[in-house]
Image (cartoon, rainbow, N blue to C red; front, side, top):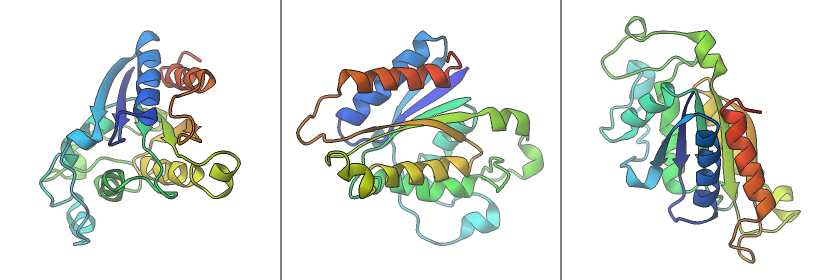
Amino acid sequence: MRIIAIDASPRHGVVSSSVETAATAAAAAGADVERVRLHDLEIRTCTGCGMCRVTGSCKIADDLPGLVERIASADGVILGAPSYFRKPDGATAAFLDRVNGYFTSSGQLRLPGMGPKEIPHTPLVRDARRAVIITACGAPEPLATFFGYTTGPVRHLRAALGSGGIRTVGSLAVTDTWRHPEVHEWERDKARSLGRILAGKI
């Protein structure tokens, strides 16, 4: 079981802590976990050129193709991103906007210079890939849910992962971080549970 844990938070705060908790739990359950900080990579914004629809890959030369390959080769994904006014932050949005161009509607990976026949197509393995999503916002409950401060980013992230044939099996939304910047123990417990679920131990 290989899992990639992507921390898309620009700060080492609640989201980063929760992603690490889930990743540590998955590793303790026997998974091989690779950790990635999205803000350590160069991922540029989409220019809207439409080349991904024609060639099956993005023309922008940055770190995204390498990250997509690592996601495609993983059995599970832990994706954590903070919520900024119902949306992921700019770097995460750039990643999500462009990652769709690397997968066909069937979920098959596309890479520059390689046709569909050159990339193994294993739908049974692809369908088994799963993800958990972690997000956080400053608003307290029930406002966070009612106004979509947590549900909005979760829907956005789930849709992006789904474009690559990755099924979201659970999520954690940490709320009221303005007044409580530390993760509560019950939230840590849920992050641990998500990591174990992804590793197939629950």
